[in-house]
Structures are given as C-alpha cells and as structure tokens.
Length: 233
Image (cartoon, rainbow, N blue to C red; front, side):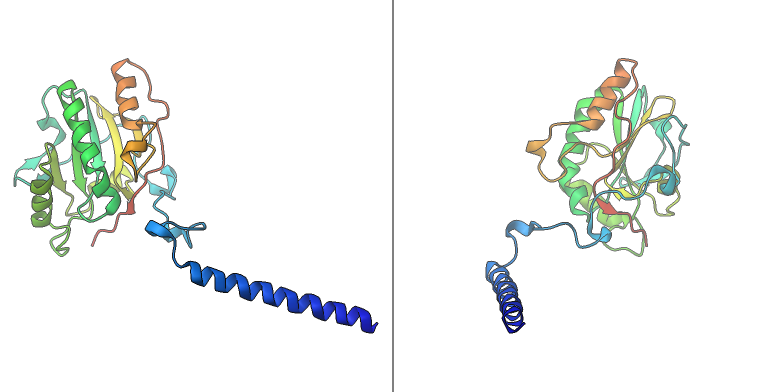
C-alpha cells in the first residue's frame, strides 16, 4: 500500500513539473510571428469567414432578380445600374474604407474592372458602412479613398442602409454577380486567397463571368465571403 501511494505521489509531481515547464517554454517563445495564430481563432467573432448562411442573411438567392437602386457616388452624382450602357452584367461589391480585407482586395477589384468592364461587366462598389456620423466611412472619407486608389469604378454610399440588407451582404468585401437581367448568378468571395494575391489559385468571380460569357451557369455559384462584418452606424 505504501509503495502504491509513493508511486502515485511521484506521478503527480512529475505531471506538475511537465505542465509548469511547458507553460514557461511557451512564455519564452513569445507571440507567433507576423500575427499568425498557433491554434484556432479564440471565438467566432474573430473569424473573417462568413458564418451566416444565405437563408440567415435574408438576402437575394441565386437565380432571383435584384432590384435597381439609386445611391450617391463619390463624385456627387446619383447612380443606378441603368446608367451603365451596354451592360452584360454587374459586379456588385460591398466594401468599405477601413476593413483590412477590403483594402487588400482593392487592387484586385481595380484589375477586375479594367479587364471586364470593356466586356460589359463593371464593378459597382457600395459602402454599407457609410454614414454621416462615421468619420472614417462617410462620403468625404470615401472620396479621399477613391482618390488615393484612383478607383476606375463608382464608389457608392449606402447611407440609409437600405441596399445591403436586400442583397444579404454580411462582410466586406462581399460580391454579388448579376447578369444583364439583374438575375443573381454568383455570391461570395473574389478568389481563394484573401491575404496573398500571389498565391491565388481559384478566381471565383472571373470564372463566374467567363461561364456567363459562354452561356453557362457559374460553378460554384456560392462561396463564403471573407472579410470584416458589416457594421453600419
């Protein structure tokens, strides 16, 4: 009996020593480099991946016809989809000034517009966070951002926050590709690598446009948006 008790005490002491040593080693190791995580996100609120399904978001579904809208552009004019002549489709993009994911995709959106607007598919950027009360996302801040990046596409302020709920946009950026009849053909992210454009392997929006050009249905027609949650004030 005494021998068993001594063995148990020895095991407990050894376990305590190993746990303490491991904790100290992690402290010495410090935070992960470049902001990388060593484990999964600490909670759903920290994940950049869309968590709501299309049904939960409550917006347009694939195949439904979107309604046109009239929003103020950064040049001060009112814009609607009918203002684009000879359109074959519309790359509706919900984005904003401050979200890091929105920023990292700006150059790709510019390239997408420059490549496909001559073919009838223009980027239509909409800021769902726009508000006169939000100094980082108000129309003046949007004008400054558009000027800094030299956006070749319209950048619209959804100041009344009436457009993005109809679409069911939940993240920035969030893409809704419409055909020329305003029918929703693709919903989701732009490509398969939000952080590193040089490592992109699948260009979802470009593939969807090319499918429409070939009179085919995009496949896939839905991906989860990667970005910051939309937070209108």
